[in-house]
Structure formats: structure tokens, C-alpha cells
Length: 226
Length: 226
DNA sequence: ACTGTTGTTATTGGATCCAAAGTAAAGACT
DNA sequence: AGTCTTTACTTTGGATCCAATAACAACAGT
Image 1: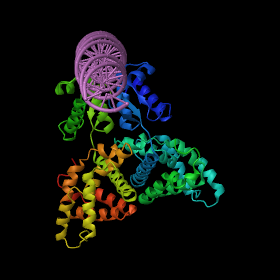
Image 2: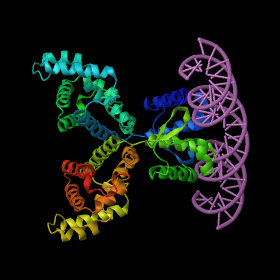
Image 3: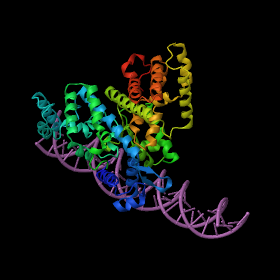
Image 4: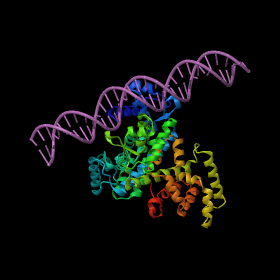
């Protein structure tokens, strides 16, 4: 995974995810190699990787096709995300933070714990929520939700958690939408509380429900799925 | 994914999973290419694939290493399996069998339904269990447990469900052990009942518990994890 | 007019060659 | 004697060449 290779892979992935290659479009090794000014060899490697990630599909001898995602695909992807993130939340509650999670994140966890002790969390006064949420910017809950903790757990265990990562849904986009929602804020607080108290089952249940907001309340979504 | 390529990949995967390459052992492209009498190119492709599957690990410029799995890794892998299989069971209960599941499997589902209607299932007389289980050989429940249905759902949705597949735990081995257990048989019946009735939440809960038998009752395991 | 067959062409798969990079070992200097 | 530096070698990454194969088109026969 050289710099060139990584660059090619991520650039290609970015282009596909952002729709610069339309779904169903055929992608030939030759054409891509020419466009990116590399030989066919790294392109072939990238194609295989993207195939395993589910972004590309073999089209027999006619090369690869950009995956087409049906509504059912998206639905299923969200379901998979939700169970994996729920699992991450439970493991976090039961086993604590894995060592691979960075110091910055730990700082925010402590911040969250402080807020919790000071009684800011679960404050019924809605005016406090924005304040809490600003403190929560980049906190552990958001991190869980955006897959950071799931990734950390995965990396720590060297597990192919990639399923959560390679799914087409752009978690950041969704998160950005959700962060505006008080419902999501409420979720965050509940989840953080459960995790802090080591209540694994509750943390998992809440996180799963949180991850499914988009399905439960489609009318709340702005841009929706990307 | 040529015949040669597929053969190389699956042969290599088999060798690693069966421990012919010991964990931590360094695998060079050159050596493997020589051993399998192919050039380095297909070996490189296979290595990348196996890396993504989590069986190999990069060792910088010193090639690839066979993944070492700690007890914690195995624990985490089983947890991931359990939530994914639980999800598969729930989706199955809620949405029915995806079209991609073969006719043979559908036949066995019908067989199971018949047994259910005839009142064989949830029979408290333990003597009936073996009879039921023989009818259940290759049934949908076993299929769910061994990842067939999860894979089918994944394929149907073109989802990278591969996480469940690529985990080092040899599901067949485990299943073989568990099939001897009356506890597992009991699970099978309960799960099938829940799926048949469309009780998604219950199906998921039961399937997750079933998938965790190995962790809950380690003393029941024969050869254990592979 | 339609279908089956055959030949050409486009495209992927594998092999080999070359370059780059990192590791390891050996030697020299403190 | 220990450590730093330099050099040589091992090993991966990329490019190009060749072979195999599948798709597509054209042509002929019914």
C-alpha cells in the first residue's frame, strides 16, 4: 500500500462514492490506467480491493461495473451499520476504551464524564442541550456514531470490521444532518450515560436505535442518503 | 477471478486457516509464487485479498505475516458473527427469504414448516429431537447458523457482508460440534419457530444467543476454536 | 428475414523486467 | 566494546510484453 497506490485507491473510491462514475458504468483497466497516468498493474489491484469493498462489481470479461444500489441495499446497509455500532457501544461499555483510541478522544471522554458528574447531562431544560452539544463536539458519542470507535475496536482486534467502513452510506453526511436534531442530541446523552455506567445492553439498544434514525424518521432527513 | 486465480486464492486461504502456515510466519511473494508454480503477479493479488479478509497482515517491506489471533480477537469475532447472524435471522423473519437462496434451501424451509405444523417442533419429548434434527439436516436454521443465509442476503443486496465470512472462526467446525448438543437443537427449533412466525426481534435475540453458545458454555466445546 | 457460425477485436490474466525502498550486516570511529 | 554509518542485498511496487478468452460483428445458409 504505497503512497501512489493509496492515492490511486482512495482517489478512485472518492470518485465512485461521489458519483463521478455513474452506477452501472463500465470501468476498464486500460481507460482508468490512462486517466490516472499509471500502468494497469496498480489499477488491477485497486479494482480488486474496491470489488471486495462492494463498490465495484465484476462484469465478466467486460471489466468492472460501478455497483448500483437499490433502496433495499441502502436499507440493509443501514441495518448492518446499526448492529455493528450497537456492538461497538456495548463492547465499549463492557470493556472500556481500547488502547488504540487516540489521546484526543480520551480527553473528550473525560470531558463527557465531567459533564455527566456535574449533572449537565440528562438535563430536562432544553436550553442546556445546545451547550452540552457544543461541549460534545467531537466527543466519544459522536465518535461512536461516526464509526471511529468501531474502527478503533476493529483495529485493536485486527478484525475486518471493514463492513461498517465500506458501506456506501456516507456516515459523515448523515451525522451532519442528525447533529442538528434534538432527537439525536438526546440519543447522544442517553448513549453516553449508558456507556459511562457500563450498561452494555442498554448502550447497544440505544446506539442501534440511534443508527436507525434515518429509517425511522425519513422526514427528518435533509439531503438524505448520499 | 480466473480458475487459476481462484484456485490459488482458495488453496492459500485453506492452508492458512488450517494452520499450515503458523501465525506470525512471514510469507514472501517470491516463495509462495515458487511453491505454487505461478508468477508473483497472481500471488500479489491473492495477498491483497487475504489481507482484506484479515488473514494476512502487512509486515512493512518484509512481506506479509499470517495474522495472529489473540483470545480477545476470537471473542470479538464471535461477537461480530453473532450480531450479523442475528440481523440475518431478523431480516429473514421480517422480509422472507431472498430470491437468491437456492431451491434446495427453499425445499428444506418447506419441510421445516411442515414439521412445525405437524407439531413436531417444540416437542418436549426429547426422543423426538433426534428425529427432528435428522429432518433438519441442512435446513434453514442450520443454514442461517453457518452463514448461508447471511451470505445469501448479502449477495442479494450486493453487500460486503464478508465480515461474517472472513472471520477466522471455522463456522463449520463449530457447527459440527454444536450439532451434537441438545442445547443447540433446542435453539434451532426456537429460532425456526420465531422466523416462521415472522417474530423478528425474537428470532434475532435467539440467534444471537445461539451464536454465542461457544462463549457462554466453553466447557461444551470439543476441539474449540480452530 | 432470421439464425448459426466463424473470424476479428477488445480486454483481462499472467510473466518478466526494472526501479525503489527498506533491512540487515559489516566495518569504522569514538 | 558499543554505536553510528555505509554498503550490499532482499523484497516489494510498477511497467511492459505476451497469451488466452470472451464478446461482437459480419457473413452465409436456411
